[in-house]
Length: 70
Image (cartoon, rainbow, N blue to C red; front, side, top):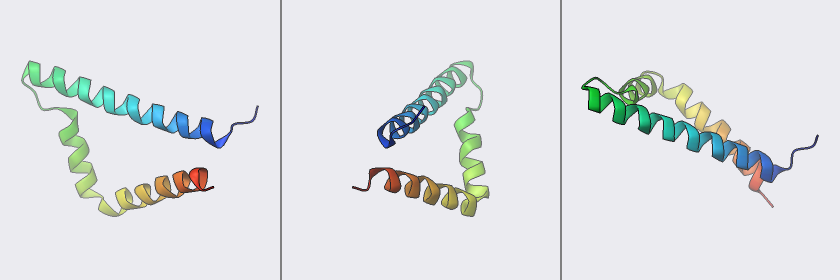
């Protein structure tokens, strides 16, 4: 089975959209119940480890650049 760059990019975009949707769903449920949403924890982790977050952003950018460069 061979995956084309377009298929890999589509899988990455779908996974990102799914994660964003689940975070929004969890936040709306948490706010309705009056508790702290998970996105506050994600923000604190990103602020606690800025170098790892930056490195992850660079890797994602390199992967997307590799797949989308003509």
